[in-house]
Length: 84
Image: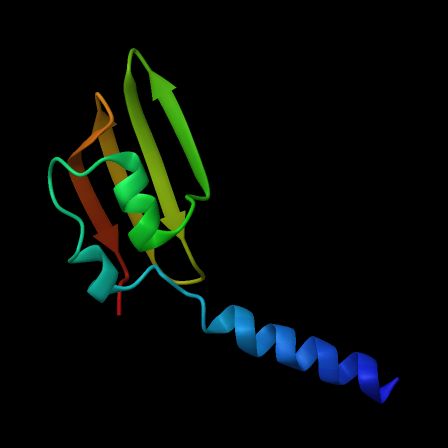
């Protein structure tokens, strides 16, 4: 039983340290970057939708969100809310 709690605690600590939805990472996003370049900075998005070759992707955590619009696989618009 103690081993299970230890494993859960370690996993929580590891996952909480993996937050990439930060102001520091948002500031690294530049117009013209490819989707793959953005994923290197922010990790995989929570979700994307595509219409007529325009992709809208969102990265979220508990309190913050980054939304990026890609046209022809290049960043055209990036907005954020609640970043620390």
